[in-house]
Image 1 (cartoon, rainbow, N blue to C red):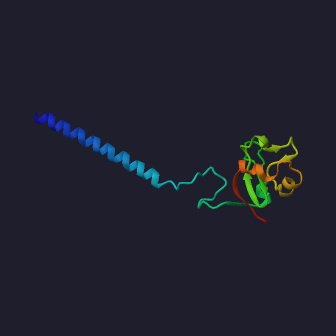
Image 2 (image 1 turned 180 degrees about the vertical axis):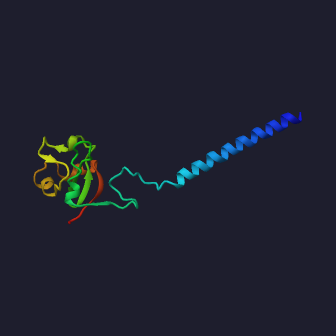
Image 3 (image 1 turned 60 degrees about the vertical axis):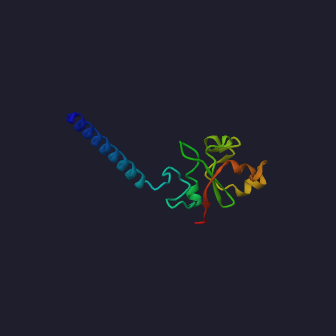
Length: 128
C-alpha cells in the first residue's frame, strides 16, 4: 500500500511542476508583449496617431500589396478595405491613393465626406 501512495505522490508532484511551468511560461509571454499590434501602421507604440508628410502618404498608394491611404482636411484615412478604392484606385483611375484629396472631395465628389465613415482614421497629415 505504501508503494501506491508514493507513486501517487510522485505523479502529483510532476503534475504540479508541469502546471507551474506552464503558468510561468504564459505569464512570461504576456509580460513580454506591449498590447499593441505591430502591424497596425496607424498608431505609434504609445497609441498616438501617426503623422504623415505628403511624401510619406504617397507610399500608401495601394499598389503591390501596400495599404491605400488618403488625406482629407488634415486627417489620413485607410481606404484599403473600401471596395470603391480597390487596388488603390477610385472612380476608374481618376483618383489614386496616397494623396491629399481635401479639395476634390468637396468640389468634384458626388458623395462628399459622408463616405469617410467607412474608412478607418489612421493619422494626421503634417506640413513638412
